[in-house]
Length: 392
Image (tube, rainbow, N blue to C red; front, top):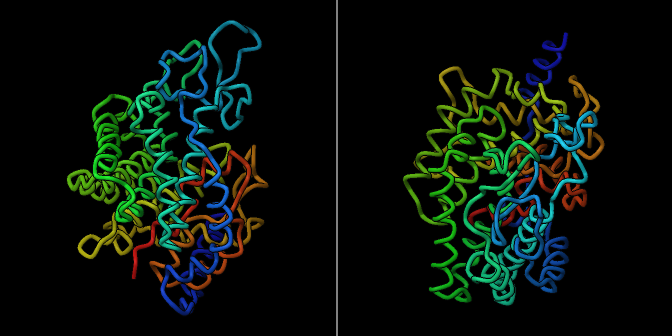
């Protein structure tokens, strides 16, 4: 019965799609929806001073002052052995874990995303000048910079000082990298500073692709593997690393789609989790963002299909009915944050533009564009879609 329902929803989407009817180009339409929010957020961002990983530290970290540190979300003290190694409670976040560095990086991402968006709307260089203060603090200034690795991310007390899955924490740097791309032609980022910023991301790419943590994450067969490729693609685009961009495109085609997507467009590994709805949204957003980053005239991932017809369009079409009407979700409810999803998922706006789907765009337009809950923010890889749209 469940399979019949899913197939019916999918067939309805294929037969009932509308025609993208918004007047004007894509950038104009997204700007129209987001302008007020962008300008308000940019005003806030202009008032913020840099806060990097050096502002706070944890005695539990095995790293130093400049090392990013976080702890595994779903790991808790063992009530039967309080001084022993932590135990896992999948899907249940431990509020006592150290999250200050993650919060600082999320804040940084919000600041740069807002300033870059405002600059794209107004061409006012004041947004770039202020963004540069934050960018230099994180990536150039010796006293406050973050080391270009994640050796100590998602540590687990009594078990690991860091883990490869911690690499997912730096999805927050994607809109920072994209913001630099948007603002680099403003004339307000000097040659030396721009070189320093790109050099940091080049070093981080080297670590991501050579350290065992990075290799482990690359080979993950769920959203972690998707997010590794998504990050590498984003940072490779900033640094002009064509070899890695080609690698990411090939990995999407030969590994991510074939191993993760079912024929109905779902992601079975995510549906098995204790938060299947949130994870399904998250992995879809990451896959779609990959297509947005990598697609070009000669290599269009939006039109790519595997030999057995798997495609990102199928993935959006599968999930769309459950975004439009969450009550129709036929799987288990998430054990936490069920009521907080969906928001304005980037899969909808990017997919609407790619496939000219008016209904996807309209649904995206009506959803929450400025979520406040930290759990939602950190699992929403794209919060400033305007900066990802090319000029027409």
